[in-house]
Length: 272
Ligand code: C2E
Ligand code: MG
Ligand code: MG
Ligand code: MG
Image (cartoon, rainbow, N blue to C red; front, side):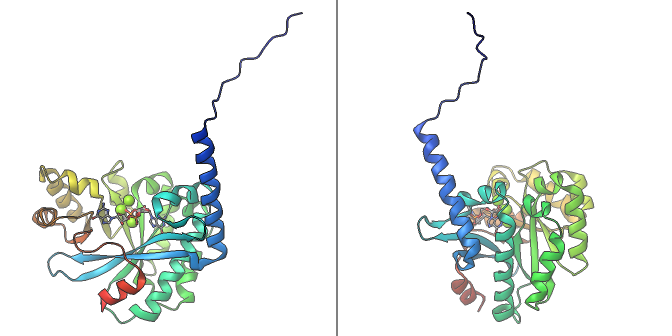
């Protein structure tokens, strides 16, 4: 008697896979726990400076998670899992509400233009995202223009209609947007021209690559200025990079050369 054996793909489950799987489960449970206990969601702030005056003009809010078992988690260890699981939507709201509280309590009178918050593609899949963000800002009774949002180009291109609708809705409240990590994606001209970004942030890889030959970056800068964008260089770590950034006409800088992301208290001391 002949039985036919259907061919199955073969998966080899290694010790490393088991370890990765366990790590994912642990990080997921840390994320769930931090959504129940928002004090485990930490916000670090990194200043953004005007290169002409050397003054701090704004700052970016960056998320970290503090877990009782896993300790301190940087974004590289949890953002993509938070996105895959959809939990990022809750984390974004927690972070935004913390930023708004800080603005109301400590930054209402200061000269900073805004604090920016990163949005993920997943945030745009959730319904009523614009309304939820606005209601968090209104609950804290701060001027909405004190908050900015950063969106990467890949997210903008993947969810173009939704992103452009949310941008328009929030722009009506005088909330501004930055195109994040510019130069790492497709650098799509349509997105740049049609979406109402006020700021474009060059990714640190672009800044570092331009050190050898800044001519191409200088052309990009001219084009973006023609479109009316205010430009920010990310990842400026050395004086030479700062000089190059100035020489091509980028007006703002965020990078370790000036300041690393820091805890709220240290940030407030720097703001003065
Ligand atoms: P991003 O939005 O492009 O943020 C800038 C990242 O570059 C930050 O890393 C910052 O610490 C780092 N950086 C700034 N200056 C320098 C420098 O001079 N040299 C180097 N080597 N790095 C510099 P961080 O805080 O680890 O965040 C990494 C990414 O994780 C962020 O990139 C963003 O995509 C994501 N992320 C962080 N917080 C949030 C959040 O609240 N929500 C979402 N959706 N994503 C977030
Ligand atoms: Mg960002
Ligand atoms: Mg960036
Ligand atoms: Mg980035």
